[in-house]
Length: 245
Image (cartoon, rainbow, N blue to C red):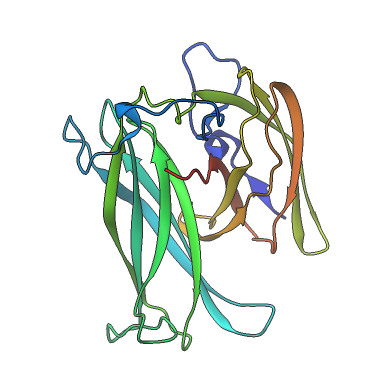
């Protein structure tokens, strides 16, 4: 039976808010002007960093009978004033420390981290084919960090969201969420990822769902999506935008 961690589902709680909130980052309308606040910096102005605070993995077999590894990670922006994004370089190693990423010449794969608000955390997931079973550990390095001013018009504020329904049917997760937006224009298609946890609360991989949601219009709207496979444990749903930043 699949259970859902409601408290961790949308991560951010605003003071005085009646329900869970999520930061959903997206692009400004085409008519918006660009200025210096839209130009990223290589470092945070307050010494903030992007830190992987949790990670985990699981091996699985793809629908085409290929061996693969699923990786989930929670990244924290330790800064107080700027949004930060980066890439995670992931190494998948066996007991001898040899790479299992297939083909072996690549030796690692990348997971993109979208802009994270200051002082907040965001989950990301990724997967890759492996040459053999027996993953012993993963190594994750934060690379190419970029930092934006919170005044950038491309970074939107919080949207309120609630789970309407989640069911397991035909070896898939069917989830419906209700989202409220007070923006005057539609928020472009957001990205979803599902983080898997075991009975001890440890991360055991996850899955990215791409732009499974349609555009978020002003006001209330309901959106549904389907995961490719189920996980017999807790799941966390994280919503953000695959912006072009």
